[in-house]
Length: 370
Image 1 (cartoon, rainbow, N blue to C red):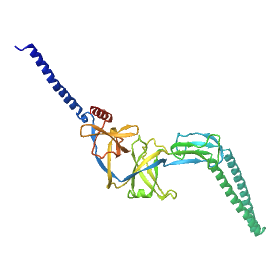
Image 2: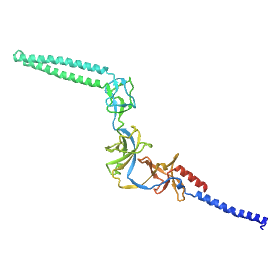
Image 3: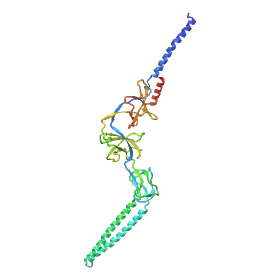
Image 4: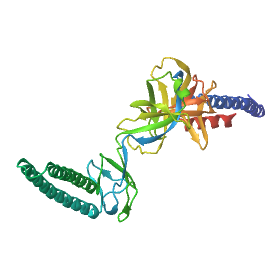
């Protein structure tokens, strides 16, 4: 029969012997949990580099293809101002009126001159006819007939001048009403109701928002790098808007003598909404033939980008199953809006975390465990 004292010693020995084993098992379990790859919990994507065509980026400004600054063509006080900046107008719509009193008086004076000239012409014709009759009957000399003919021809010239003056006065009277030259928007109003308009003074600026374009001034050497025309381009209007393809690219056939640059017009599609004249744009020029790659570009999903203040980075999967933070420099946003171009920081053979927040949590947990 086992002695009670010996049995107690055996139990104590077994307890002491099993304690390191349990501790080691717990340590192994914790190590396995720590080294479990985080890739299974965080969605990832494998990125690859792609061929990049020859292109360059230029800063541009937006302008309207059809834009008119309406100016006064006659003096007068503004008696009616029907529109303001931001109003939509139709072709032929009355925008403002200038006091027509002076123009109406000029038309009335021209009418009176026409009437007087007509009377003088009637009298000169009658005198000329009478003189011809007397000459035929030998009652008047040939010199008197010549004088009557001269008076008649002068009366004819006077009536033509009076009618031309009447036409001119009517034209000036039409300048009292200013109408829109096309459908569009009023961009600016340069005068107030009650002010005096003088010939040449700007009144209103109207533009057509359906036809817009980006304008850039480029050095001819940069254009030559693309291999000549025809050119293609895409326009980035703002950071929160997708890049749009240009309808047409026109290179003006003359350079500016002061800046030695060539102006390039990039027509935007009609559905490019929210584009305002004078706003900033970024134009990506590339040649029509894009078969020759000039480098490798990396494009990544926009969801994989982590932005913290001035830091722009991604979480890259490592061989140990974790993630490492890597800073990158971004380029343009591609047309789908969900992809961005990486200029530096990635080679194109990495695996990125699509959820940078969750990847950051795993990375901090792994760092704390080490």
